[in-house]
Image (cartoon, rainbow, N blue to C red; front, side, top):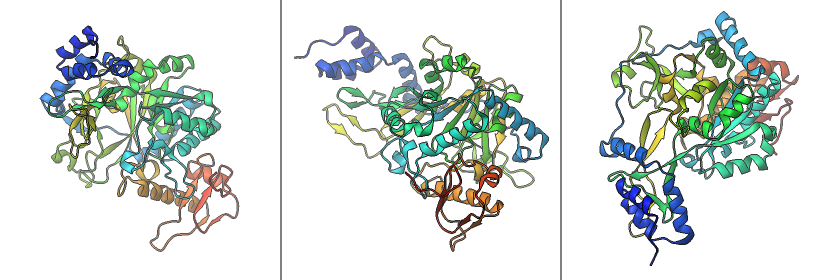
Amino acid sequence: MSTAVDRELAERLDAAGQSHLVRALEALDGDSRATLGAQLRELDLDLIGRLIDRFVIESGEPPVEGAIEPGDAIPLAQGRAGHVEAQLAREAGDRLVAEGKVALVLLAGGQGTRLGFAGPKGEFPFAPVTGRTLFDHLTAKVAAIRARHGAHLPLYVLTSPVNDDETRRDFRERGYFGLDPATVRFVVQGTLPAVDLDSGRILLEAPDRLALSPDGHGGLLPALRRSGALDQMAGEGVETIFTFQVDNPLVRVAKPELLGHHVLAGADMSSVVVRKRWPGERMGVVARVGGRTAVVEYSDLPDALAEQRDADGELVFWGGSIAVHAIQRAFVERLTAGPAGDGTGLPFHRAVKRVPHVGPDGVLVQPDAPNAVKFETFLFDALPLAERTATVEAARAEEFSPVKNAAGDDSPESARRDPNRLYAGWLEAAGVHVAHAEDGEPVDLEIDPRLADDADTLAERIPQGLAIDGPTALGPDGEPITFR
């Protein structure tokens, strides 16, 4: 017979309505009991209890509080060359980077599950000619910016417990994709247990392990505090954090217009938006809620508002968030100043998912329908806590083509097609002939970001006499390459 479990822990679990976990501990011994016991001791049972009351017992998301009004965004027309305000913003943004006051944070905690890909999403081979991965492509953008500005520009990679080991190994084995290893730092986001959809009981992934899930990209903020990254940034003179997602190969890393408008406005947190393609598109919109800047999830925006149009027929709530932000380090420090470094004040959200779990008989259950609730925080929910914000519009065709779904919109297919169109436009503007297929689409193209990340730079660096007659990848020197 197993020995009694830790009495204090058992009492805490009983008081929290999680007595089944005491029985799970009693059924184990040795290392297995120690493993599960260690996980249980780390749980904030008071917080989990509140989340269960809100999202399981009450069964819903909190309503949006306050009147929803159109957001204030700096339109794309003011981001084009020749506009005085845009020029000032670009100069301010470039200066911020060159002075070493910016740190980059790549949000890469997700897996490629929806793509049918086993592994961190950053390892997904999205490029049409070389098969280059998202990690390889995005770190090349970082290298290009460092070279252009001669700046330190540290890169922090947010991982999750699910993919941290594999992500670090990929960077090591690939030589950190040419970046100085000392300038690449990894930060692991926290986790929360999944709970049963009907009862709120915490689920077990295995007899000796909880079914834990990452706490959402809002978990970046406490993770930066816990890891010591905020102190490290402060010691290196970093004032502004630029965040971007691993699944968007078109992202403009360290976008100078965003950084410039952000610093000129004295903002705590700022965002990039693109125009929604239709009212019901599944992306949050940057709006004003109760007089403060916020992102309203597509599911929380009433249909009447989502479909509202102005006199020109344009959507009134058009500013779709692409999860690109500039955030002041000092703002993150204020938000995470609690004793444990995780008192951000960000609201939690619920996600109803299928979660495999161990049943009362110890047998693994593979549910065929959603059976569990996961708890997440979202980074954009820090916006209403900011005293000042700036929102900058970007051209969707130039800066947003995410890899999210296995097929259709926002899929590997579209994330290969959209860069093809963009690169073909750059090449043709530089006088290069580009072959097109019968359907009018350009041939598969890749341009290494270290060669150019905009049309003007490409025009300056493209080799003379270049013609694109078939699938082509241009390397950092402008010559066609094959993937190593």
